[in-house]
Figure 1 (cartoon, rainbow, N blue to C red):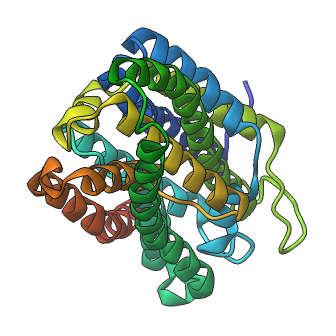
Figure 2 (cartoon, helix red, strand yellow; figure 1 turned 30 degrees about the vertical axis):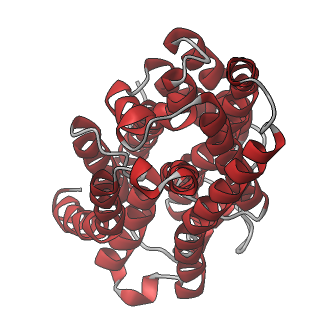
Length: 339
């Protein structure tokens, strides 16, 4: 039996934790892609989960730009000391926060959790000098701008779609938009996999480079094939298990969703996520999708949206980054003593 060094053991633990985070991300965020289609009965829960799992898998294998941004945009893997422990602390923080918010049925952001975790752990390890502030700020800007744009697009799309079908019979319109929701939910699941699974790919590659297990030229950031495949599969498996607590929140507690509004919300959020993915920028799919739902609801009638619940969700969004950052920094301090 080969003699395993402490670094190899930590790397194995990091990979396991990263894939666990990816699985929980898929589990946690299943509702994002299918909540509206399940709520409007366009798809049965079982069919929706199968479609979401397959589309998440395909999306996860389609891009690598976001992975490079996550792995090299927050901190420099070529200069980061004790990088394996940094990544381990970041993942521990993100997983804990995801589980806490899942338990309470709050659609918090896995993206915020892992980004806050990486930044907090790097800061805990080497202070502010370990943070690539220009890259980190650009990521934060994308996280802030994307839901605002999604709200606006959702508002406009539902107005446009409603105008286009204004003379159609109500039952015919409902039937048509239930069919269209199959397409929009599939696109949304694809875009979710394309953006979210890459975050795990970036974190694993960050650990490999900083730990000296993947030799690349400074500035180069190539994702190994096994990392792509394992992250994509973990995301798809997590999606297959679903997150019914959050489906209940997104699928009905925020607003009453009809087929036309569900399609409009799906279309708006999938479009925004795809655009930001093409720009190699990570977004919170949870933020974008929820904001699109809010935009659709607000365009119809302000009191159609349960703003109290929306406010509680917003608070969770705001506090995720600082909480996971502080938690990750604390985890690093503890891990550094024992590892």
